[in-house]
Length: 295
Ligand code: ATP
Image (cartoon, rainbow, N blue to C red; front, side, top):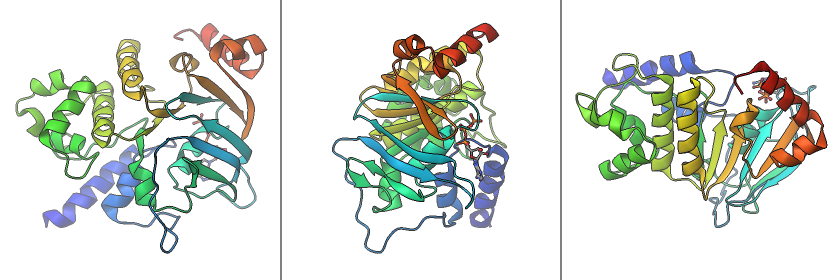
């Protein structure tokens, strides 16, 4: 009976946390054993990553036939660099993340990791290389240790503890009545937004992927927690190829490169200083967010 209820239980929780953004959909597919829209090609090889360079090469994509969302998008994220994607609502930012994780295939163009077309390799090998820190993480009705170990099959207790330390959630865990064995989720301990975010970061650290996809990872937090989480993310993303999808510009001003997306096209790109100097869309968005305060 437990076998039957656990997936249902998780599914309910997943549904409640599904938003427009990028959530742990791969985990959801794995849990409920559904097929995603894309299929592995027969005999597809595994993705082999030596230099985690991410390349979008003239990518055209729409969710529906008559409505193209990305109109020939090209950009490169060099290995180990930190690139942020910003732009007005509906510009296609989250769509880029969904394509990189291959929830969908482009209608034209290619997405490459280390020179390999992600549509040609197995989905499992692709997703093993990418860690997502989503807007709103899914926590399973299980122990906090299970929730962190979930990043990697067969993770050891030591790996979980090290990841918790690096994600700055270990002091919190050590104060719990049963430590890592404390039940969390709907029927257990409720975690705050910041704590959930740190569990997501720890889960990603256990996975130890060369590529990180951050989806406005700090959207639901107060500014002190946000600053602390940002500092952790900065540390964690060092030496990893990082693609950050952001709404608030202050969180990504230090990116190596910022891509400004507007209606599915690359409007501008550069560093924060270069983009301010260009007095274009980015400078306008920056001025607006400064005026609105909080940023
Ligand atoms: P926001 O800043 O508001 O999160 P975004 O830049 O991340 O926006 P996307 O979520 O990538 O934008 O959406 C781009 C466009 O694609 C929007 O017009 C949206 O309505 C559309 N869209 C997104 N998801 C789907 C979907 N599953 N089916 C159909 N259209 C979708």
